[in-house]
Length: 323
Image (cartoon, rainbow, N blue to C red; front, side, top):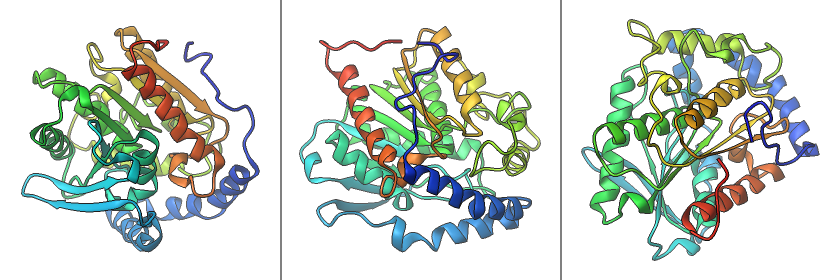
């Protein structure tokens, strides 16, 4: 398997996916084009996203939610009935362009992860832009990982997962843990990862109408704002330009029409060139972070089964993982 011939799990999109794509093109994309032109616009987008909390925070009653508020670690435990007394855990890093989002606002992913993988999920709340920057996000992720180690988990018990900016932070965390000599997690899952904020990013020159969700201009503005006064080629800023050698197995999934698709492909190529085992999947015409929409997208629900199968291959010696 190569990124020039990626694995496509399903060759056709569902009717629900076509409807969601149309709806996003008509609503979310124009809104992003209007608001993502200034820090104030991004804050307004954050408030709008937060206003959906009553819907986004829903989880089945049987799922146990336990907030964590410490000086160095903030977030919540999400534990499905299948995850009680599990010996393994997921550290989840949410997306949102580093401007918005939280662990609780990503429960549509985290409770399903806990159920599909039969293990608790710790979803962190890292500090957000514009007040905070890359070092702060990295430090929050490292502190949360160490928190799990302090709870009795070994590195081999931990899977790190993240979507979009959380996929970026997942790769930053892995590279940081390796460089600091901290035990690495068993594996990592990146959903629509944002890996390149530099001028080399193919996302910034992607066909402007390909992605029904994220406009090129909006992504370009966020990249320029976050990388002001610093090198966008630094691995902390653009982990695709970092060193992948020695990292644990990766599962990277992305929609075939996403603005971030080509950068995801480059990330896979760099990781494999460094000897990292990678499972890469492009899902036909799926929107950005489509597992987030599992309540309405059948492909979103199937994605969690694929994550479970990936980890089964990692954690079961009798099964093999194709790099």
